[in-house]
Structures are given as C-alpha cells and as structure tokens.
Length: 112
Image 1: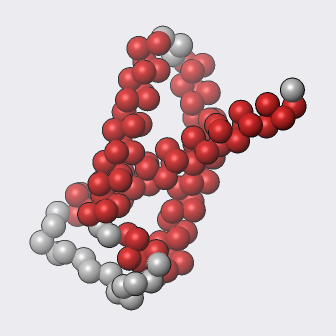
Image 2: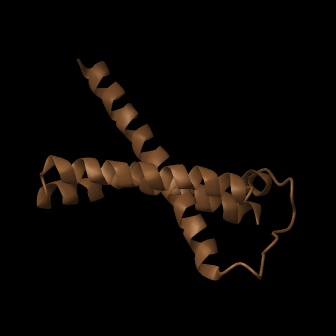
C-alpha cells in the first residue's frame, strides 16, 4: 500500500515534469491570451481542490505508513472518490510542472 501511494504521487510529479509538451500543443492551436489565462485559472483551481482532497482523504497518513489499512466509505458515491483522486493528481502535476519551470529558468541563468 505504501508503494502504491508513493507511486501515485511520483507518477503525477513525473507527468508534471513533462506537462510542457501538453502546453505546447495547446499553445500551437490557440494563442489567444484569454485562453491561456483561463487554463491557468482552471489548473490553479484543480490544484487548490487537490490540496483540500489531499487533506480530506488524509493521504499523508498513508504516505508515511501511519495507517496500515485504507478505509473506504462505501456510502460515498464512487464518482466523488475518483474526482478527489484526480484532483490530487492534478495538484502534483501542477507542482511538478512549476518545479520543472523553475529548474529550466535556473539552468538558463547558469548558461548566461
């Protein structure tokens, strides 16, 4: 279980490191500033809800093996469970993307 949760987080970060590929596809097809700012707002909203879902689902307990079993609420609709985990994935994609942006900028400064 520990490996599954860390795998989920690390795969999401890895996707974020390569998210520039997806952004370049969007930029190629739409170069209008309102589209760009709308996508930034949507990404920020998903990451914000991801923080809430991360805390609500108490993923830190699973990541650091403070809880050795997972509690599933069978009364909760499955779609809410899936949306929460997709938002958490979006949060770590967001984090990974901006880490890669910072590293790229730092690399360009070192070249100068």
